[in-house]
Length: 141
Image (tube, rainbow, N blue to C red; front, side, top):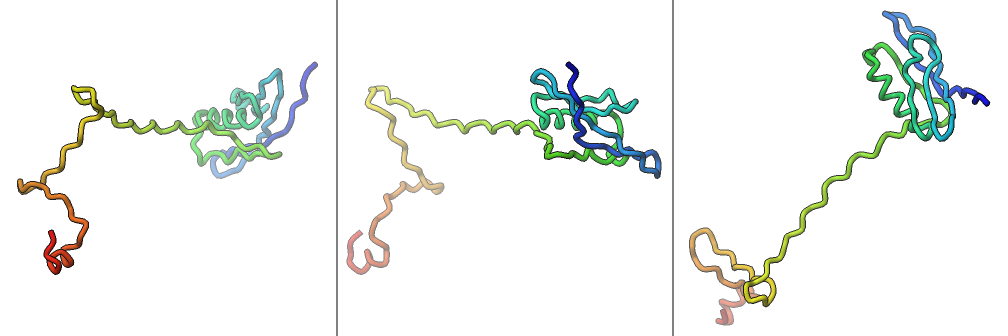
């Protein structure tokens, strides 16, 4: 049995300074596949295909933009009935790499980290937990 076409939206084409009649877009539901496209010649060769009406609408928009018309020559597609073109999800960014712990030759565990050396070549000193102002008063350092 043939399926009925559903009106789902329209596109307006501009021919020079004049706005043409709207071109209707129809949805045809099949066995797990939805197709959206106009029935008016010469635009009827652009058909969006997808598992759902929203995916078919996104596919139709991509194919319509590749048709060769500049964006100022048409408006739309204007969708009716709650159809929102479902764009594919953007690719996920790569996961950051985790640092690898090195094992000491003796097998005792990770190697100890070297203490940083100041740029002037002086040996690094461990920071004191006592502020300098208190250390000079009490004489401890």
